[in-house]
Length: 172
Image (cartoon, rainbow, N blue to C red; front, side, top):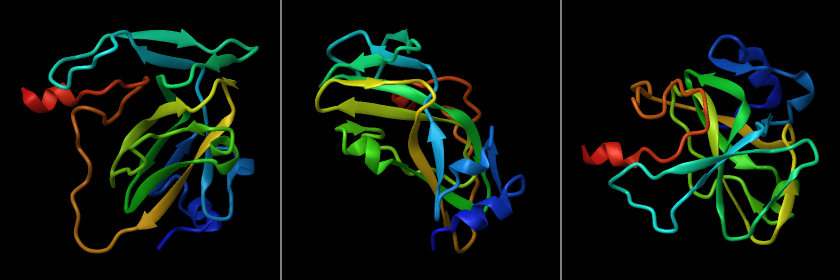
């Protein structure tokens, strides 16, 4: 089952942490997360799963930044989240999707115990101007049944920045 907005708010600072938290961002069954002002783009046109791929950092200026179509941008949320006893999931907001901007190309599924900032895999089908601070996606929570192990990945847990793929560590 998906938690209601009221239930999310009730669980805050217990098994759901959202920092900073703004009551105005609570929806009927989700919480809106905002876009940080930094993005990463890969520098090479061919990426290799077995090695670190170099990236460049882009700062989103106050007047916004036009994203190019057919380019993958990695962003992150302003908000740090931590989730216990629930499965966090991330979806793009429909208003953003209707402008042709996909917020998470493949990775909207979180794990029980994840703590950190969400990396956003942003891809647009036509050029679009984006702004830092925009409420770009929403987090929602599923209850979990049965015994489980907390997420403990050494790759992405407790991150503090935009995270490129660390898949190459799986080959080590």
